[in-house]
Length: 110
Image (cartoon, rainbow, N blue to C red; front, side, top):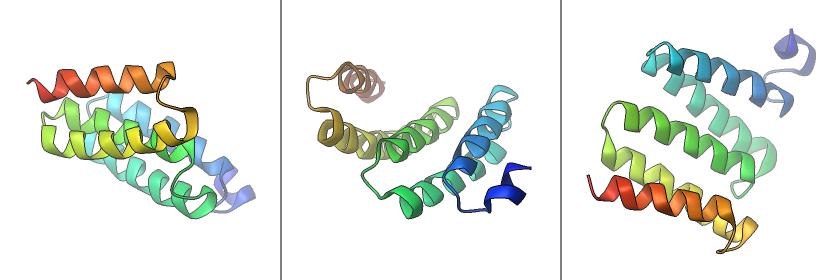
């Protein structure tokens, strides 16, 4: 319904894609989840700009899918993209930045 009402590129639809991606992820359907995460990322960049917090969240979602599949290099790549956005938007001392840095440290040590 949201897709028909708002259109496929409206920011409101981002939430729908992210919710669907989370459902697929929880079911272990990683390919389906990643497809929606990538769609959400592209939509977020187009609608809100490459340095918007929603885009960082999309990278975080992708990282989760990569980590669940033990694709560490891919996870680290998108985590660093998220970190760059979060540092710029929230500042280096923000708890969201600290949490992501901690996850990066853990992931890099695997």
